[in-house]
Image (cartoon, rainbow, N blue to C red):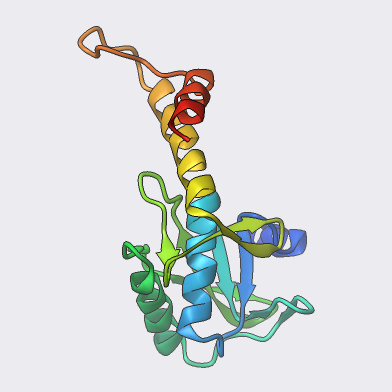
Length: 168
């Protein structure tokens, strides 16, 4: 990752696709953050930045932080398998860059709670809302596929909403 790109990401602050966590964050807290990002649209967690004041603290033990991040992903239900976190430098300090893929085709939970991001905040979603969003995202993914004459049906986003409305 280019340094200027990283500074731009950092300068925008936390949002629906970016979370900051400290190296000292518990694995459960990381898992909650990862599942919230995956259930929203995916994104990035920068480990080594204080979310309260956006100060770059850095990571002292990169190997331990990387292992904790990977283990946190596996604590989600179903397990969220993450790409290997990379080390980046920000303000002369090492930071762990963790890419969180979007959850489709899965919805991820932590101890039965489905989390999502609303701006900077993690919010709990009901199973019903999570299923509805999942249905719409699936319909969008299907509608972007090239047309195949062998396929017997197609689904538009509007049609997915109708199916979902009848289901719930």
